[in-house]
Image (tube, rainbow, N blue to C red; front, side, top):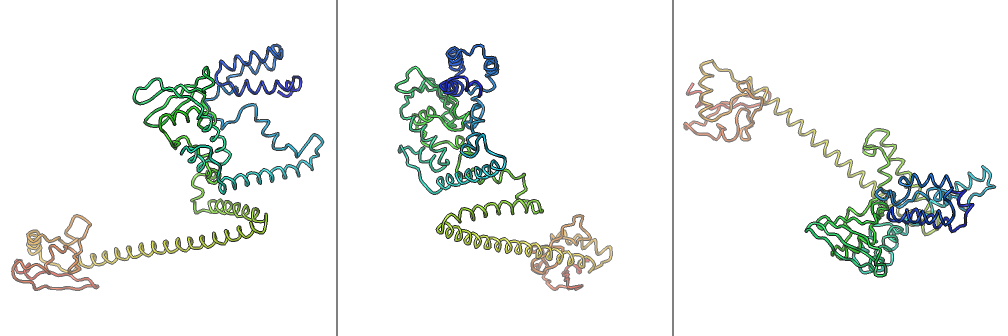
Amino acid sequence: MGQVYGALPKTFQVEFDKCVNKSETPEEFESAWQLLVDKYNLRGNEWLQSLYIDRKLWVSTYVRDTFFAGMYTTQQSKSVNSLFDGYVHAGTTLQDFAEQYEKALNDRSEKEARAEFETFYTKPVLKTPLPIEKQAAEVYTRKLFSVFQDEIYESLVLAVKSNDDDGLSRTYEVARFDEENKVYLVGLNITDHIASCSCKMFEFEGILCRHVLAVFKAANIFLLPQHYILKRWTRNAKAEAILDTLPSGEMHDNNQKGKNSQYNLLYQEAVKCAEEGMASDHSFKVALNALREARIKIITAKKNAINAEKLETTASTNYQDENNTVASQVDSSSELVTLPDHQQAKLGDSCAENNITRYPSEQSSNRVSICTNCKCPGHDSHSCLWLKDARGSTSLIFHREDGAFTALSSALFAEC
């Protein structure tokens, strides 16, 4: 486009930008394009005609269903050029370019830091008492809030007319009081608070348009639904973006690669604090105190993590020791008493009558009950013979082997 711009008056660039980027419908673009080429006698320009043939690939009105974060196809080169405006020129040498490039990046970083400070430590002036404006001021960055605030302010001069209503959704006609012929159609899902406007500003830029905001006000929707707040426009988007750029799971890995990623991230933030803290004596004191407070909090968190790990390790060790003790008691108890075959049969019947769990060697299952009264395996507290007096005899015979006790009631032997 540089050759075309250079051969035509400056008014052409303004009108061309308006035709390409401000046309809201294909019909508007077609009409504006024909007027433009006729006005500047460009019908025979082959390069411009080739652009027109591919218009559906780059003209905004044909791609407004796609999210471009508000960037237009004709501004890509402008954004690159604006970065070096005032730093380089046609006579700049390669060495000067390297120095000016570094200076341009530093100034850009300082500008971003200033904007971030303004977002977090200053409050914008609200233009309306609407809750949705106050909510946006607390959520959005300062620059995005200024754009959204303009949409809120302009929504106050819009007239809203409800057309169709099927109980779940409504259709509205929205227009300015002084532009009756310019009507926008807005559809609203009453239940989910999902709206769509014919201007497609949210789909293209990620910010709700004034037409939807006017409908929200008419429908008594006073706060911005969460699905209309894009994370990229919020205050904490930059901090979250740093974590999102790291490979999945890398920040939580205990390997050397994960540790390096964590170290690099912390190092970058510390360097930023040091650079900002050198601006003045006051900022130096603020940065120094903040870093010292952060270090104290980090040490406390580190101690808490170590104590929690020790507690978990101790609990796991105690649990394993208890299991090993029970297992040793069970193994020794299975060899304590040996009875003749006919006595074992009677003993089994007696155990069944008295609801006594048999010894592990006689069970098909590996689970062994441990009595809480006599601490012996093979039965539980409900069937313990220590507390049982079925036949008036509570005398017990004890046998000890390796610290494990087994108790058998003499009443059982009386039946054998």
